[in-house]
Length: 349
Image (cartoon, rainbow, N blue to C red; front, top):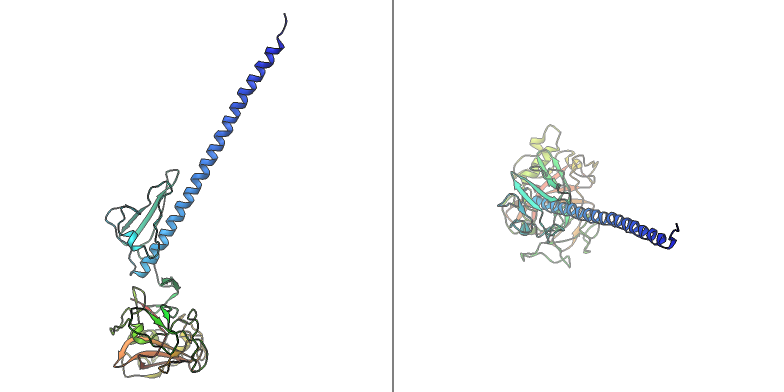
């Protein structure tokens, strides 16, 4: 019996071809699965990033709107679709609300002072963030007009730990602000006395006339140029601060709630509010800087020598303020012309 070698070779080649096709098919399957996994991972990463962006914008909204969140009529609602208030309320912080990479929507729920935002991941699980009711606490920062401000709790009061720096710089410095709907500030540009150089407000904050700081109203405790939920402290609220850092045993007489006791008061309260007074230690964390002031001659005076801070309490054509000095450890309470330019600190409502 003879063997047909030619036909045997052809059969062997066909088997090899079938095996090769099978291997290619298996490998293609692995590639497709890997590509799908990579695609899903990328989509899930975007979902998590989007939830984080929405979360941060809601936190900023809450700080600037009295610790509240945007309301909703449905629970939950679809962000960018049925959440009718959210797009408008978050516009200043997140102009374009993100959507799910598959074309769907993230969800938002708000109830009982807390919100939840959620996305559905590629594996069907839910990825979400839930805030705690009243999550913001004194000591957290406040974002206002593009700047983040540190805050500090002293006694029962929550204060900005920095001078306010909002608005447009007045140039030349001899110009005075007007009630034109634009917040206007001076920036003290030099140390020493009677300078006309405009500087950078980034560290020291702006100097504001009393009317400008108050937003051209005269109500004690008005919001003025502070963010929503905050206000310009009154004369009595400054007194509360002074008493909170006073340990002399004569705090009530050194810092009375009246409008007749003026001049330098107390012993070392100023040193507890700033590093830059005599024996300053800033033990309260209030961190007053010596930013000087703008005087009615149109020049700057006293940067690194004095700190002048407005209250929202007026006294006829003048207003109450607080003054610290580089060579004294006490606090000065007096009134001065509203046209002067002084620093502003905001106090939590």
